[in-house]
Image (cartoon, rainbow over all chains, first blue to last red; front, side, top):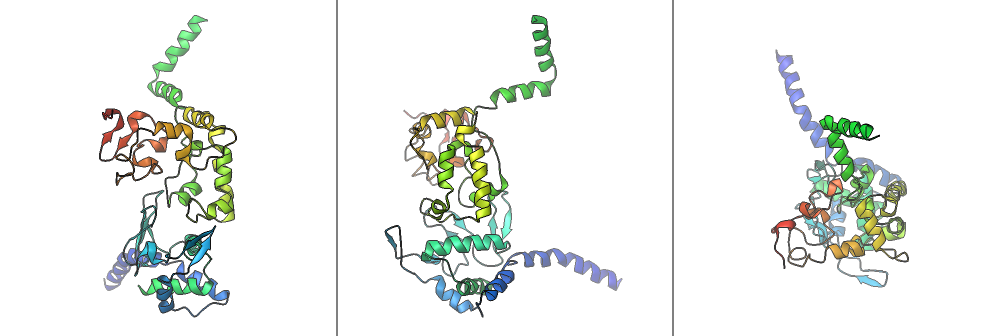
Length: 148
Length: 182
C-alpha cells in the first residue's frame, strides 16, 4: 500500500516536474555554447546592468540614442512588455512565464526553444545596440533572467 | 448531346456533397489563395499577421526577403536563419500574386505598374483604393485596429483568403456592409 501511494504521488507530480523544466529548457545548452566560445562565468548582476544600458549607434544615417532592452521589455522585465512601435504585447522574461504562439494560439514556455532564443538575441541586440551581443553579454542576460 | 448534359448536371446535384463541391469550386478562385506554410506562419506571425503570398507579386517578395532588407524590415530587425529565409522565400514566390489564378491576386497584380517593386501591401494601388473609405476613426484611432497592416482585425475570413465586403467586421463599429458611412 505504501509503495502504491508513493508511486501515485510520483505520477501525480510528474506533470508539474515536466512543466517546471519546460520554461528555460534552452538556457543551459546555450550557456554551454557561449562558454565553448570563451565566455563565462556569467553574472546576473552584469545582465541586469546591461539591460538598461543605452549604446548610442548610427544606422543608415540615423542616430539611435534612447534604445535599451527596457524600451520594450520593462525593467525589471517581470511584467508584460510592449513593442515600442507596434504595441505588440511581449511576455515577461521570467522562466516561468508563457508567450502565446500566434500560429497555434497555444501557450509556449519562455526560453524553451534554443533556435528562438538565438533568433531574438540576434534581432534585438542589433535593434538595440546596432551590433550583435557578445557570448558573454548573452550569457549574462540569461543569468539575469534565471535570477528573476 | 443535350441528354448527356442534363444527365451530368442531374448527377452533380443528386448528391449533396457533390453539389457542395461544385459550388465550392465555383467560389474557389475569388479571393486570394489561402495557402499555408508552417515555417512562414511560425516565423512571421510572431510579429504580424502572416499575409498571404498572393497579396504581392513575386518581385516584391524577392526584395523583401533579401538579407539586407530583413535586417531593416520597416524599421525592425527581422533576420532569419539562411535556411529558413530560403524556404520562406520559395513559399512566397511560388504563391505570389502574379503566379495566382485567384481574382483578387490578379487585380492586385494588374494594379501595380511593371516598373514598381511595391514593398508595402497597403500601398498596392488596388488595395489602397479599396481602403479609401477606411478613415482614421475606423483604423488609426480605433484601438482594436490601429493600422491597416492588421488585416485580420476586420477581415474575419482572411484565413480562408476571403475579403468580401460582408466578411468585414470593424471592431467598435460593426459589419461594414451594414454601416451608413456617407
